Length: 250
Image 1: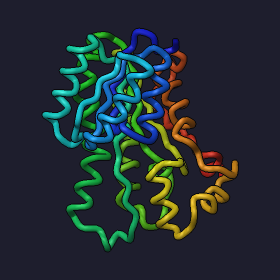
Image 2: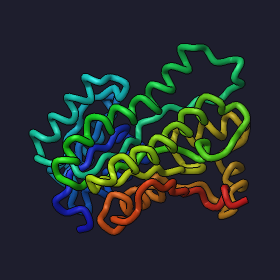
Image 3: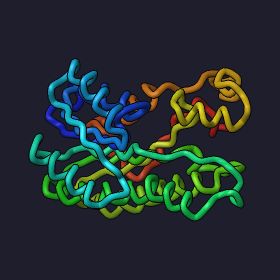
């Protein structure tokens, strides 16, 4: 039980990587509050997760909204007592030429992908400081490490998450709070489907571009998040952890 006695908040937890991570957390003894903007899917996922553990709670949550964050943190403390892990997983993907973006699209993607991460850390870190312990995992992307055509907006948002995580790792280290970013490659999620569609190929064809010759699964990413959330990674902070089947090794 690698997370026994720990409480986690997972944003964007109703599906994909967030859901896979939550399942692993619950199986390893954690108490989990997961949030999502989609209330219907979140409620369905809650019923599914209750088959694993009773220590799970769903809250509808817009990560761009500071008042929503205040309520999520307050409810987590009231229900489970501590906040030991924050997985800032919620995100939006967009891909098209930079000249085709509107300011509204820019603000939306930056709001979810960057402001959401900022607000999560802002409101969780004070509780972690009181405990002198905590692990924060921020979802970035390969797009936050390398350039790609048609990803100026998404890449900018994920690059911001990468460097913000490093900044916060230095700022919070004295309080024994660790902050790391993860950088998934091609993963079998709705976002992976969107990447394939944008490239006008099937997901099977897209998988052939990966050195390991398959797309990653949400569980592949969840295994990394589990490690970073656990005490096994107690000396790891301020790093970017890549899970991409070898793409970035080229």
